[in-house]
Length: 486
Image (tube, rainbow, N blue to C red):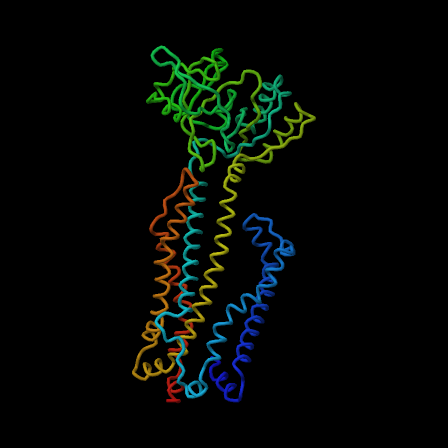
């Protein structure tokens, strides 16, 4: 505390304006030094943040005039705001009371310092909950069964120039022993279901248009085996059945929307799609063609009339991926020597669907640690300030044979109450905010009570460890020193 220093200065003739000016100058200087350190830390940690979050942030963005000017003004604005209250408050001290030790600081029931601690820990708890929920949702997405196999599948574009030689191309791939299946389609899982045409079914002898969007995917005979899509009833398309050129396969969701009760009831039903009359020969079980942000839509699969096949999907051996890809590339160049061999793994495509969530998880983790650290600094300062004011009380308690744990518990309880208050305020906010965030997913976790409890308990533990440093130090101090002035 600088109260006695100010009291002495006022005794020797220092004016109130001089004291206020000194406080404000010190506040601006400290904030300026903090800004310099912040910029240095930003330069040092920016590569790490970019790596964790997948962002491409650059320190050069600060050099824009519209950003640089507010940044340079920060020390003056923050310094004045933070220094004006203590400057006016401290300069108003009566020297006689200060020098006699009669000054009482922060004697009210609620101080601004306590409000700041509650606010800081509230933000920390919200970020802890957010980090946990995002992590659990990402874990759920990664582990949820999609209804097909996405592992060891490479995908690439399909070129019509390959069509006359496709059967030979497929046979050569399978002969390598490193390729299990190959299929073609208009779209592949991890893409969006955008294609649709008008559909109608026979009801009471008349064609009735369906009242929902039936999404269309054009496939060949190898698509369903390549992806390991399970059948609920019926059979896959087969070259042995010439009528399959007009027939179709639908998913369980389409059966439900059409009101056909069970997959078995749907087999053999007439279904007109895109003006072509055909029958349902197979019902596949529902699977997640799109990301888990979207619900499972009713789908229809048709064989191509002429074109319509845009993608090739190849199921390779999982034991030797490099050799498998090399074999596929060699076969590819054999039949398409002028066409670049460009492929992606299907599981990587699905991973990119949740790239923004991955970035959010990384950023929440970083900011959670920063917020907890700042909250601990605030609590450390408040505890140091409060314990300094209670030094004589601690000395009396030690003289009266109070143990160190008793003193630590006594000193800690007021601060822990602030953290509990922060938890009471922040947990409902965190629960509401993260429930809103989860609504963006059609398939999502529920926020369990233990996530909220864990955030509150973790904040209490961190707070107690922070407070204990000051509390134990005060409890172990020699009471004679604190009582000597009495």
